[in-house]
Amino acid sequence: MARMTGGEALVDGLLRHGIDTIFGLPGVQLYGLFDALGRNANRIRLINARHEQTTAYMALGYAYATGKPAVFTVVPGPGVLNTTAALATAWGVNMPVLCLTGQVPSGFIGRGRGQLHELPDQLATLKSLLKWAERIEVPEQAPYLLARAFQEMLSGRQSPVALEMPADQFTVVADIEPQDPLPLHPKPTLDRVKLAALAQAIDAAKHPMIWVGGGALDASAEITEFAERIGAPVGALRTGKGIVDSRHPLSVSVASGHKLWAECDLLIGFGTRLTPPLVSWGARPAGLKVARVDIDPVEMRRLPVDFGIIGDAAQAARALTGLVAAKANPARAAAIASAKAETAIAIQSVQPQMSLVEAIRDVLPEDGIFCDEMTQVGYASWFGLPSYAPRSFVTSGFSGTLGAGVPTALGVKVAFPNRAVVAVTGDGGFLFGGAELATAVQHGINLVIVLVNNSAYGNVKRDQKRLFEGRHAGSELVNPDFQTYARAFGVPSWRVTDADGLRVALREALAANSPALVEVITDIDKEPLPFAFIAPGRR
Image 1 (cartoon, rainbow, N blue to C red):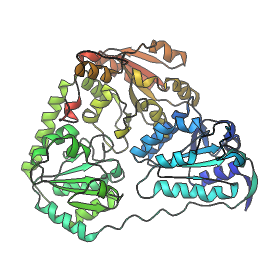
Image 2: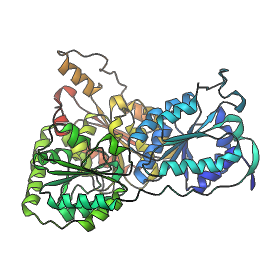
Image 3: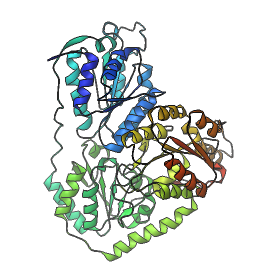
Image 4: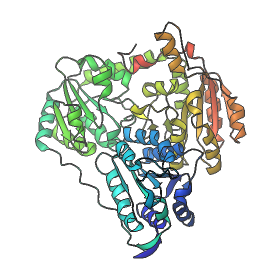
């Protein structure tokens, strides 16, 4: 037992769970927690921000890049609501993010008395968004409930969770029994009968294809070995990029994978919803069999398949490698190489987006990390940017969260201060969190931002004009002078108009050893649609 405040009990618990950084924005209900953080500043780093949403996005980026849990803290009510887009994004890409928040004072919870930052039922709101959420009623509960939060977000299908605590309990002193981390729930046991049946199908298949998603981020070596054994191409759209190094002969982009789709007779998914091949690529090849490996048993009901293996991607890939016969098929290898070569030529029609993507890849070091955004260069990066390792391509996934790119990338750079991190964004998305240049400067977060400026919500404007007889509404933007804007925060900046200029500016920005912004001026009306290389059914 130790005498602690509720805030101290939480900080002690965070330290016991290996948390050395917390992203947060203080407010009246959290004073006791922030006091405890301040008194432990030598053991846990606090990074504040200019908007609550950014604290959550930074935690998301930190978790995405490291594969470790990340924590943010904001006031209840509007503070929590400001973070829900980031929480929904973390849920969509299965990242272990913990939201620590306050509540109105204990005696007012659920009474509707109009207390500062009160919501009708904040806990119910959080439970509707997240895998797990709970309330700490008194400090004595804090260690165990914090350990339960980590247990839930890290077990099985990883996902964000939340804990709330009444404002008055952060400063109450009590006898606290510390709690070490709880064991994670056991991973599902692989069904050997189903594995054997899938192995037989793999041996019988002539043109198998593997597809990977975010649920396989920690199975890179195992999936690569499995793919090599059966000679199958491995494709990914966003969250799975880099699981098999893009330079590997069997690694295919969403665009080159589609070229091989017509002859595919067995599709094997690891940690993925299989959306590109089964939804975006049109009709399934005749006789196609589909297999999935996923740690979440519910997924097998959401998308019934011929072979459903519930379990860890790495364990399943390793088991299958030991069960299948090796396939040496020179003709298949040649077909994969041909598809990749044809795609490399075809995607050059997407200009200037592809030339800008190539410029970023040319300058970004091999271990650099790229963070995408809902902008034209971001879309092109899904099929045009080679990724060399898992967690080197950070994305909002299917959430498609406009404005997430730069705040998330700040968290990535906090996690890896000595690796180059480049975030691409548009002029629309950037100003969702443009004030966070101040956060970057304050905390020495040397993120390089590539801001593609076409003075519009570009894709929206083009779609409107294309679909509604040239009309558009609400999609044009009036921007500040981004060069002056960056300099106002003390951030060096560059303005360029083409890929050659971007290469030069990006090298200088990465060498500046400070936050930096490179603005690229483009014309949305002269940029072709990139979606033919992502979802061939879209026009």
